[in-house]
Length: 282
Image (tube, rainbow, N blue to C red; front, side, top):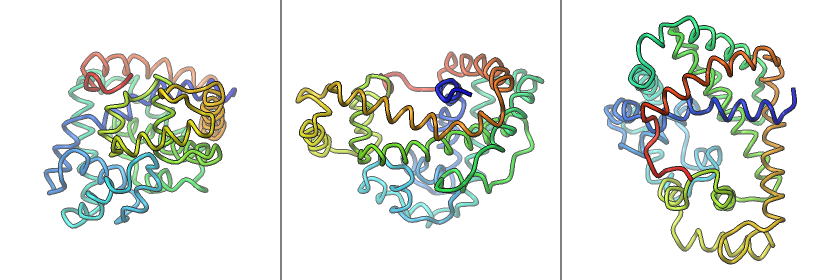
């Protein structure tokens, strides 16, 4: 398959995975174990598949978060709950969020079961080499319920692609904060206030990153990407698509098209039900 096609497919379906980061049900289940609510439950729930890891591992694999922010929540989260308990709580939260956003009738439909099977087939094309976050999630057992199998499979695809994205960013010479600054400057991601607030970068750190990018000819002083900056971001996205193509090649064009046909109505339904808070994305 053309990596650009598989990349577009991955991005269109990613909503069904990413809604779990904003679902109050997930935060409630994880914080109910004693983990700090909000970013604490986020760091714990997303990293738990890798075991009782420290802040350095989380910072390295998540890439765009301030090390200082991560250290506020990791490893203290493991003093409150074991990684296994956090994983279980995360799936309970996802189950409740899917039921709220998509509805019981939809979740029980043959279309959701078929989508889950297609995602599982695609995930069989993923490989763990150099993909730590994916590898941790790939060692988790597949859930029994079709909608949870769908979410688990989409999580594998997302983390596999995300690990490849980190490789692409490093190849481009972009640090974590620089990656976030340049992505925000494209206007196709987080707004700057949301990016700073959720990723933990101060005004001074953000400004220093902009200054460094200006010095390398990648941004203008007012924070816009130069032509060279636009080319670099395009190269990063192309590399990410190429590095993330294997599962979609395994699924094939017919299966990928069918999965998109099944998944997009679910995406639209979740968005209409308020899967994401207003004002977060550009």
